[in-house]
Image (cartoon, rainbow, N blue to C red; front, side, top):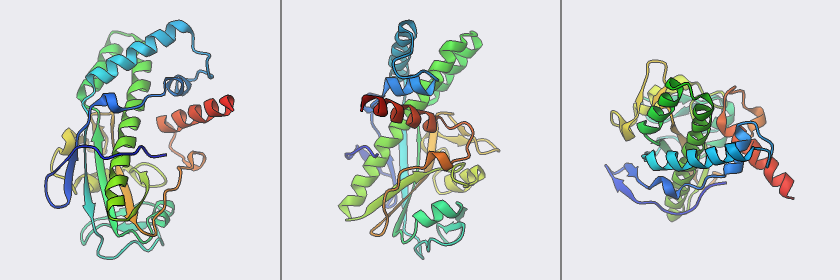
Amino acid sequence: MIASGLLPERALSDTLFSVSFPATLIHLDRDAIAGSMGYEHGAMPEHFRDLLHDAVNQALAISDVQAGYRLIAPAVPPSGKGHHIRIDSTTGFDTGPRITSLMKGASLLCCFALTIGPAIDNWIHELSYEQDYTGCYMANAVASAIAEGAVELLHGHIRAIAEKQSLSVSNRYSPGYCDWSVIDQHKLFGLFPKRFCGISLTESALMIPIKSVSGIIAMGNPIRFVEHNCDSCRHPNCSYREIRKAQAQRHATAV
């Protein structure tokens, strides 16, 4: 599922754009967050639900969403074969066969980055320093949900941009998932100005601030949106998978 609607944006060049919106626009499913922490639907104790409510309010208050994207028209549209996607004459991503197949025929490739800001990192670090491990665990779960909700809104904005050109969009794919090496973060951020959206990379390709998301979305007429198949993902610590699992369980219970 993709959120819908255009967001305020600013053109930094013909192909590079920054997008801004308040964190209060992000929809948070508190039951899904509780599920990502290991609680069955409705099983979180009331005291912890109160703590979760406070953590959500705190996280939304200090989040500073910064997002942006670059549109690239590949000289040769992806063929959908092999493991490689050529971005331009000097840059290519070794995305693996699944992502490559889903980018087949793309007329535009949208490379994006988003962060919810450094204050969230500082808050989580402070809770850890104070040895408030329950609060730290909860803050981390809430922050992950906010980052995911923010990138859903950005994805919806990109889809609205594509629809203006009568194009469809794919799902979003990030380095580190679906056999795409995380080290390609360096190539991805090489397509942006330095510290784009306030994000920097460590040597091992970790994004700072931690609660940041980057990736690629294909745009084109043959492109279609395909839901992530979390069961096939081999990433061991994917908070998105846990949130999706909790949402699916909640929906099944409701039915």
